[in-house]
Structure formats: C-alpha cells, structure tokens
Length: 466
Figure 1: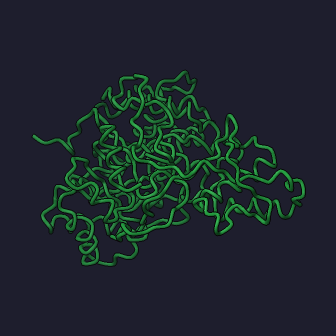
Figure 2: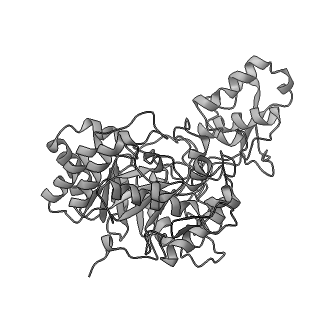
Figure 3: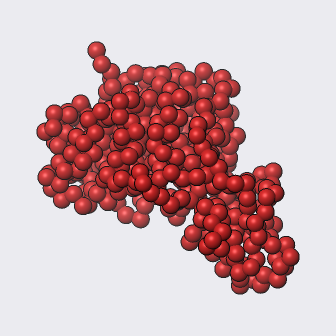
C-alpha cells in the first residue's frame, strides 16, 4: 500500500496518534497537513552512528525540519536500547544521543517536541510485588542518567508491556491474569494495594524502580502493548480480541493503576503483522497486528472503549493478485524423498514466513503434504506469483491451482499488489517509482512500522494545551 492509503485507514478509524519505526520521506509526507500526532523512532543502529552533537543535528534536520507540515510530538531514541529479550545486543550510546537530540530540537526552536526513550520490562529485576521493583543492577547507571535527562526536559518515559509474556515469566503461565477483566487466582495484595492483572503489576513496578533511582512521579507512556494472534501458546484471535477490548475499556475508564491512579496513554502494538521481523526471540513477533495483511481487521474492536461489538474500518484500495495458489503436485508428490522434502522446508527459515506452521500455531496440524504445499505457496506469493522465474516449479513438484487449499484453521494467503517497499534506515529515500513486490504484509510500505496510539479517550498533561 502507498502511505496515503495507510493514513486514510488511520483517519477513518479516528486514530489520532501513531508511532513510526521507520520515518522515511514518503511516509512522513503522507502525514503532512493532517492532525495525526507522530512519535518517530531513531533506529538503534543510528545511536551508534551518530557520534556527536553535529551528527544528531543533521539527523533532526533530515527528519523534522524537512517536514514542516507534519505534527511531530516525540522522537523516540532507539527501540528498547537497553533490553536483550528481542535483540542480541544493547545500545548504551542511546543515552548520550537522547541528550543531544533534545538539545538539537531546542536549537531549532522545536522544544515542544520531546526526545524520549522506551524500555521493555526486562530492564526490571524479576520480582512479583511492585513495591520490590528495581532496575537490574548493571542498568541502574544508564537508567538513572536517562530518566534525569527526560525529567530535566519535562519529557515522558516509555514502557513496553506484553502481558502474555509477563505472566509466563512471573506468574507461572497464568494466562487469565494477563487480561484486564479476568477470573484469575493470581490476584494479590501488596501492602494496601490490590493487583488484579499483570499490567498493573508491571506498570507500578516500573514506577517504583524509577523512584528508586531518583525519578519519582514521571509521566509514563505505554509505548507498546498488545497480544499476538499466532506463534505462541494462547496467541490467537479470540484471546487478542478479549485483551484489546479490555485494554480499551481500561484506558477509557481513566482509573489508572493502584499506585498511579489517573489517565494512561498507550500505543497498541501494532497495526499489522510484520512478516520479516527477526523471530529468534519468538515467532509470535510476526503476529502482533490487529489487521490482516490485506487490510481486513482480524476481529471486532471498539476503539472508544465502550465494549461495543463494532468493526474497525477496513483498508480501501487494496488489490489482490489473482486467486492462484502453488501446492504440491499430487501426481508426483509421493516421489519426494526425505532429503528433498527437508530442503524445501528449510526455505521457511531463509526466504519465506512459515511461523503459522510452528508448534501451537494455526497451521501446526497440517499433514506433511499440506506443509509442503504451504511452503510452496508462501514462496509463490512472496515472488508475486511470478511464473517466469518458475516460482512454483520446485524441481517439478509444484503446480498452480485455482481452488483454495486453505483448511478451516489454516489460511493459504494470496499476495496483494505492493506499491512500495519499506525503508528501515530512518533517513529519506524516495520509493515512488519502484518497485518490486515485497513479501506478504498489508502495510508493505509503512504498516509494518506503525503502532496505533490509543489515547483517544484520555488527556494527559504532557499533550494538554490550555
């Protein structure tokens, strides 16, 4: 999809705040002259490449100054730069870049735009009681320095919370405790405060840890919260719908947490699935989206938090490729030896996304032949059904069919026409003329990079105007 289609989708759903992981020119231009407030992200690698204040000023000019009609609100420095759960390294350089970025914004008379930083819950020590919350000892110096920089500029700090992961880590896999409205037996008291779900636990634990390093009462944005629909135990569409409906009602209530009552701002993670994201930390990372790749919502969801059974507005203008699938040729399928079969399945790790076939996922119960057909089709669709490069040949074992091979629980997708390919560098790069189709994802241009910001029903002091 071209970025303007994505912006239209957001506006039709009255989504007024968005976090972008990739701030390339064509994406930012699509938000010009709109009221959508943006949080743009400086990629982790750039926190290492930008060596001094001058380098950071140049980056700010490229992203902010060159797009004067975009409503920028925040610049997030890195993505969980001190965490190791989803990355094999940390980026402590981001702390200094955080300071340089706010100085650069002040220098160009954009002090109303705040440089911020978000952290995953793995920066905390593994305890259950919020009152015992603290940052890991090796991170305390960097956490202290970063929160001091943020406090001095009246900027918020971000917290990324994934409740399904938190209950697996701290509450013996009690999935029920991950929902806002639940029947869990894990409800507990911590002093005079009662904790009824894991979100309240993690949010207050982070608040306690900030207080312990000298940063009490900071504004905390929930920079990412969501529920995967595949790729992990209990990661499915019904659970995702239940969680998001509960989240919406919780935010709308403005009740806050036992320790921090009041409105909370939260970005829903995320708009659509990301089929090329690194899955080493879990296949579920490719299945966070509340939309399917073809612009259809996965489930009904009342963004206003009123608990209504209402549909999200679907994307407009999506064009599917022909209804053709590539499957194992039944005439020769039985002749495939084990070595050849394994070679085909290896494509799942190297070229196509087969996370839906992993244990516990939606396509995990396919027969051996169906599994091969799934791999064949994913390769065929990823290649944009290109018959000229023999994308369904597979040494003669594949054939193109017009009958949908999907099962009641496993969808064999058909690719959409891609208008652009995404740019993850954080610098501008024109893609308007291009373009080869990328792999299956609705937001082939930018939806892979979006969080929906879900603060439609609350007003917090950091974005309040008198």
